[in-house]
Length: 601
Image (cartoon, rainbow, N blue to C red):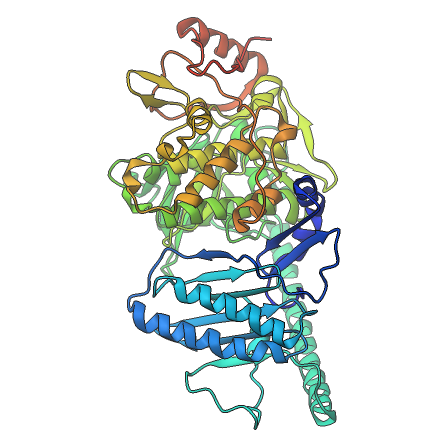
């Protein structure tokens, strides 16, 4: 289907084409897979211009509108309206919007090779499926191999498609308040001239805006460079020049402003303590709320972390990454200033019996999807490939709408875009989230982050820490317990009891499946984050069978936070592990599966 219809990242589909074919080809002589409105299909028989609507795939949002009946009727009106128009356009496409306590956006499309009659039949089939849904669902999608129909309460296609043309004399005006937009390539000469004039005007206006913006940016950067030349250059504790990483993309705050904003770093404003310092809430004089990370004044590693975060995070722009506002280097203080997020970190909700009920399944699934999008950006879509190395529930912050944002890039490693892995003899991260190849040998790659993501997914589903999962009189590691229930066909028993029955069972099972794929022992078996995103977005994407996860079983576990390793030497890590094994000897797995054991090297 045409790439211009909705704002999908089609390069992602192209990039992972070989991964999809790897799963599709063994399935038989013909197969098809959808990625939202994009369709990939192959067959050993000709299927062009042939209607294929034997079966429909459907997904529906679990949330219900406040007025289900009125909302449902307006949805049906909208989908009927645009479904009647789409078959008569060259693109076999129509999109529209209507209002009902907010916007409702609809889109329908057939494959462009279908005839008008076949397109009508296919779309009528999707409408029949829609009519079978309970009234009031705030979003749904129905698709076959020949057509797709979808509506949402948010805009999921290009606004340019809603520039509605004048009503055709042969078609009566809509009585349902629907603004529909039809792609039509058969415009006449007058329309062509009008379009040319509009394009020229738009080009001139945009060029003027770009030129003016460029001048403003140039003048602003020149003032900043002059100001930085006037500031004295200080040496960091490790002998580095602190001015070398104060880039034009970060704002330098003065210490007096931050002291005033945080009430001189008072205990009342303390939000939490990290590995290298304390985080405070601050309020600037204009009322803007900020979070200030105060790193140790004398720690060499604290300076390295600050330098790493300023260089990396200042260049990262993504809605699922915490935004760095600036830094401060005055009077031996090392401060990082971030956007303030109302709901603190994910672990504060997930593992708190009193607050976990605020995370219903819809919110948990949104958090799982959001983290995957942020990691995909770091691994594949940013200017340089970045491996986080310390991904955990405590480093996932939540805004006021419970949208997740990845934070704490002090241990992140930056690679050229064609590099994928590295080695280190300095281990940094948190046990319970660290991939075994990294914890034991210092080998890290994008698959190390994938492992950590899989652990977080299982924690979100279960509401329990990976370091301890209590079952009856025995306690087993979460990955071990999840693997056993999965093999026994009892995977749904993993879900957090606080969720009750208010879940989408198929989504829960799919998330458990994806989590187990991410924590497989061999890094080569783990999916990339691009593949994970496809798995979450497209239910037609086939999931392979997971292999044994990398887990450790002991005769004693707890529900305490995972051990945080702050840049430990490999020898220290292995010695620590050996000491732990002497205190808590390992026991056999309850399901007699093989166990990967950390040993001293």
